[in-house]
Length: 466
Ligand code: NDP
Image 1 (cartoon, rainbow, N blue to C red):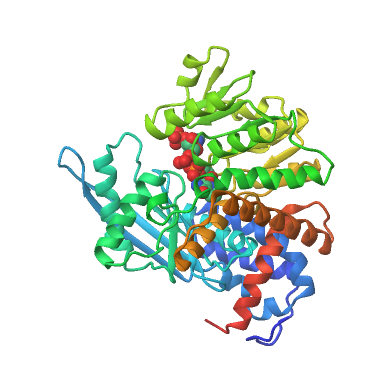
Image 2: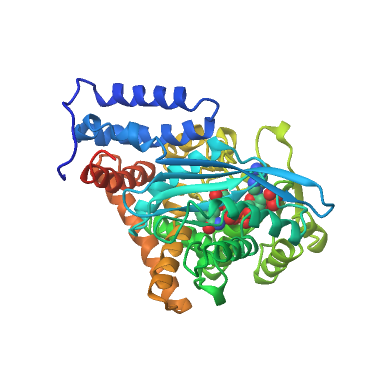
């Protein structure tokens, strides 16, 4: 343990301290349930650490790590195609820079608000630490909805958004990437505007196009990485993906490449979804059907229900919030890859998965399981890969893109994929071993939270009270 700023240790027990910090977080950040949920999950794991390391209590590391270093909120005015003025809200949360420049995606979705971005930025701090690369944590975005907008509208919005954001980011300061609603098209428009204003061609964003600084495998990285992580989990029980039936939710970037890697490893993915509903294809989604989905989603920007018109054996199950559960998670399968959005698996969904004998849950999306669902998976001894570990392949490959940009060279597809694969193995090893060290073998939630925390907390101690 490194020396650092400490005050006289108080008389608090770890349990009391955690309860106090949690109450403080709720009081200071009212009406932000997703942020409370993400903090609660991490703090619950840290109890085990604080029992061994009271120096974190006296240095008030938890109060500091739950408070963003900087929070930027701004107006984003733009003209739509009818020349009407539109106004959205933009955000960037610069959460923690103890181990590197802020790094984390931008989300464009109508549900975006401060609490959702704070939860994502908080998760990002631990996730980035787990990747083994030097990246701090951040997140940003807007309540802008790209759905139904023309390319020109998306471009004007992105240009207005970047006109403000460019003052706060930079290749050694804060390096955003994509997330929900922000793919290659949006990164292109954002990068173009940054370059125009700042007059510098630098690696200020990741997820760039291949011919202008992007990295091979970055589009695939989150999905591929999640499957690599799940493969490591399966290996601990001497199993492989061969012939395993898999449920995947969402049909965006993460889902598409999860399906692709599952097919390469001999599994049988049978579902994908979007916010309107899910399709279940009992024959399995093969390479040809996946190509059709990619065209539908990435080019035509259509809805997943169209899959059932194209492939007659597939069933479309429309979203019905009154049901209280998602029928996608009630299909019998071996592995589940929630890859759409937060809290998409509630306690009922988790119970349905468990009752149907699910072996693996690997989270491609961020915080897709509620706290109750997570608890059920852990109690049932399901191989459960929490998001901050299982989906870290995306940001890890963003880190590799930054390295290539700094060195002004480009690695081959095989090189990047190899590095990604090794990083996912290393993350699994850290989570697995840390869970054991702290007396909860197999609990990768504790393993990920503690493994991610220690590096950041020690860097914070080393750097003094800043
Ligand atoms: P995309 O925008 O490419 O796709 C998102 C998918 O999820 C779409 O099918 C979308 O459907 C669906 N979806 C979004 N919101 C909801 C909702 N409220 N209810 C139901 N379905 C919804 O995003 P990504 O694939 O990039 O991101 C998916 C998840 O993965 C997110 O949680 C993201 O934070 C996480 N993630 C992404 C990384 C990346 O590299 N892209 C890295 C790490 C995590 P619809 O089109 O109808 O909205």
